[in-house]
Amino acid sequence: MHTLIICPNILEKLKNKHQVSRREVEQCFENRCGVYLEDTREDHQTDPPTLWFVAETNHKRLLKVVFLVLDGNVHIKSAYEANSIEVAIYEDLGK
Image 1 (spheres, rainbow, N blue to C red):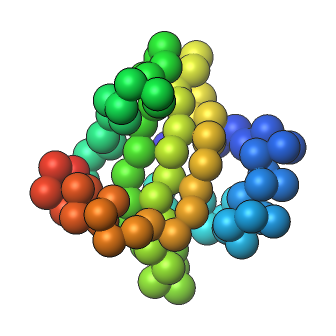
Image 2 (cartoon, one colour; image 1 turned 120 degrees about the horizontal axis):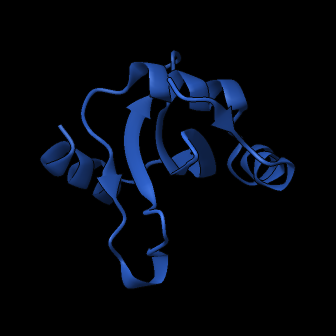
Image 3 (spheres, rainbow, N blue to C red; image 1 turned 45 degrees about the vertical axis):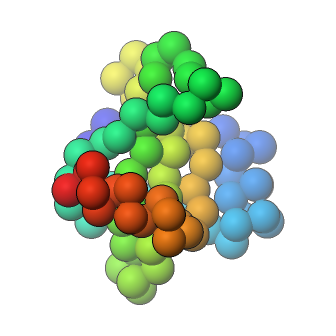
């Protein structure tokens, strides 16, 4: 896996807003089955592209992880419990 970078303000948001830890994000990368999907929604397009996937933590918590790859490093934008629509999209297009 590439180096995982979570800037302090994002780490705080993950902890306080979504109750997601850095280790849970790492576990999702380790447990991922499928490919990364690109967020093509107009309001979310970035350069480089925003990528995402849905995976379980080791405690079976299903998270959506959103990130960018910059200079070979993975920069986390967000991670939170995936909703049923996100799960269905990932099941259809990502696996």
